[in-house]
Image 1 (tube, rainbow, N blue to C red):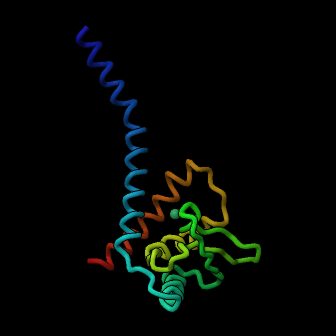
Image 2 (image 1 turned 45 degrees about the horizontal axis):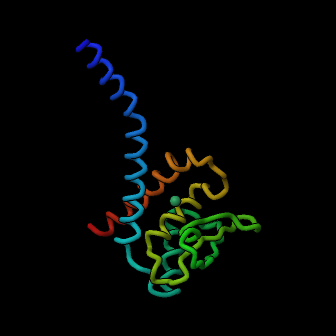
Length: 148
Ligand SMILES: [Zn+2]
């Protein structure tokens, strides 16, 4: 009786590992994104924004692409990127209040463009578990280095 109880606990423990890893990595991605948004420099004006975008084009080697900014007051739509109808052209959505955006957002979204994520429609599972953590970690490393 005792032995089968401890075996049951072991099995339950093993079953709990995948969801725990999943929730842990989701939480870590969200934490990294929060850090990047809050611990990177706020965008002061359009000159600053243009400077950040030109710099990212060089750093992330995406010189052949045109990136247009769309401003939105909808929190669900901001901090996103998607392809435009024109070839090699992308939209990057920012909060309509310029100072609510930060350099971390530019690094993050331009990393998606650099990696070709905006050209593909990944299933949510792939996006949440592989694409977002990769870009969140890339951006986190960049912001962390600039703060230390
Ligand atoms: Zn992202």
